[in-house]
Amino acid sequence: MSDCIFCKIANGEIPSNFVYEDENVAAFRDVNPQAPVHVLVIPKKHIASSAEVQDSSVWSTLMNAAVKIARDMGLDKDGYRMVINTGEQGGQSVPHLHLHLLAGRNLGWPPG
Ligand code: AMP
Image (cartoon, rainbow, N blue to C red; front, side, top):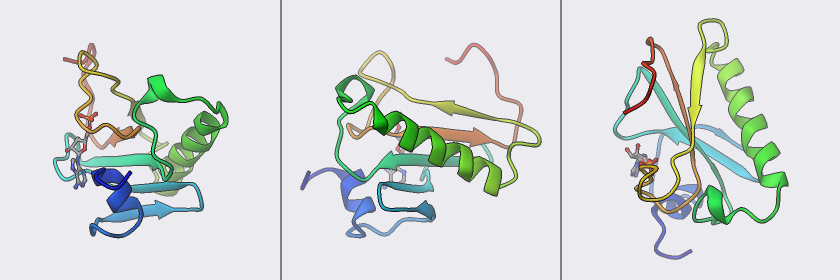
C-alpha cells in the first residue's frame, strides 16, 4: 500500500534499523522501544491486521521468523514475549500486521 509506513520500511523507502529480512518478512527495531529489546516483525505483503489474514501460511512465516530472530539474538535463554495488537481496543496504531518481540526485562502481566 503506497501510504503505509511499514510497507515503506519494508521496501526501503523509509530507512529503519533492520535486524532480519527474507523474501516474505522484515524485522526492525521499534522507534519507541518498550523494553531493552523491541523488534517489530512484519509480512512484506500489506495485511491490515491479524483479523484480515486470509492465507494461514502468513502465521507460520511470521512466527517462524520471530522465533528465529529471538534465537539468533540469544533471547531464548531468559525469555521473551510476542504480542500482536489488533484493532482499536487491541491497541493497534499502525494498520499493517506486525508482531512485537519484546525482551530484556521482566515483563508484567496482565498487560495494560
Ligand atoms: P501497535 O501500536 O501495536 O500498532 O504498534 C506500532 C508500533 O510501531 C509502535 O510500537 C511504534 O512505536 C512503532 N513504530 C511506528 N512508526 C515506526 C517507525 N517508523 N519505525 C519503527 N517503529 C515504528
